[in-house]
Image (cartoon, rainbow, N blue to C red; front, side):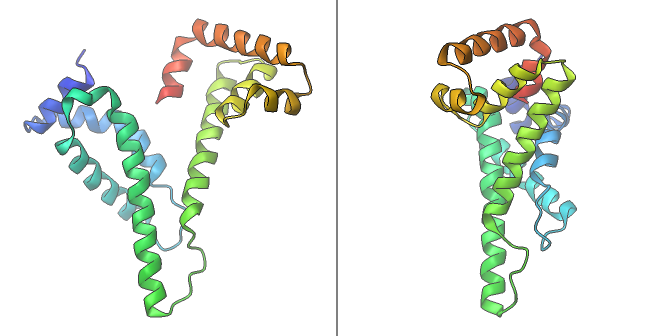
Amino acid sequence: MKTLKDIIVEVQHGNEAAKMELYTRFLPLVHKISRSRSILFNREDLEQDLWEYFWKCAMTYDPKKADHFPACVCKRLHLHVNYLLRSCWKQHKMEGQSLDGLEEQGYECCSETLAMEETEKILRNADCPPRLLQVALLLAEGLTVKEMRAVMGISQQGVSKHKKNLKKFLESHPEVVKLLRM
């Protein structure tokens, strides 16, 4: 199986099969990011624009850093959507039109919410116990052990125990870890 580095190098050399493989790998990401809730953007147009930007990123990306490509391209696509929203906002502001429904931060909140919903769905489908699911979601939100203790109403040792059990659960379900990383 080809590594991401090999695929990126082949894409940069014009290999259409490698381009299709990279497209297939990143299709879910681009679909998810293109779900902007702004009424000013047509979803298909936004997705097309994101793909154009994605290919520009892929063609200029340093293959030596291929391990970081997914995170880098994800961040760049998010920033590109924010750039588009800002540009649209400036255009409407200059034309004196109403800005109802346009919020720059609205997309980021939507993205975080979608990511949390997707994480919860993946863990539920893997029959993750409810308490471990709660711990996983609290960790995903970035809560510390002390904050988790307060939310869950248990001791710090209890939180640590649940974290260890979550780790064991994820180690015994590598397919879940793979889905979460995507």
